[in-house]
Length: 145
Image (cartoon, rainbow, N blue to C red; front, side):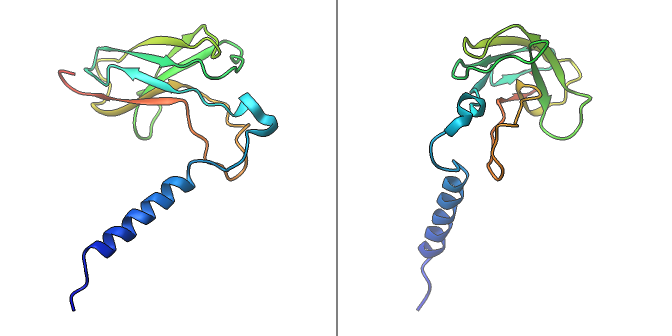
């Protein structure tokens, strides 16, 4: 009798579901941390940009967190190691109101996957063992974007 190919597929599907659900939450209500644990959603427009172009980083208004001294800093960077290709822009805005920032992507910015969002996010409200998200969104840098 020949084994069915559906058994491994079911096992893979169950494993994927378990891993996905396991990373969603640590369970329970937000507790005393409240809005300190809130991470705003970030989107980057357009999804594809050419070197020398501009992306708009839009931060939603779901969190009521005070800006750090000097205001928020929005960063755009290629995915991967290294600080040399990061672009930073200061922003005057409150998370409770949402804000957006225009970020010019330099001509020599690496082509490929990139991200943009709030730089130096404070993860101190993240409980030990939890998987805390960063307030970033993805985009791609491509010739002819």
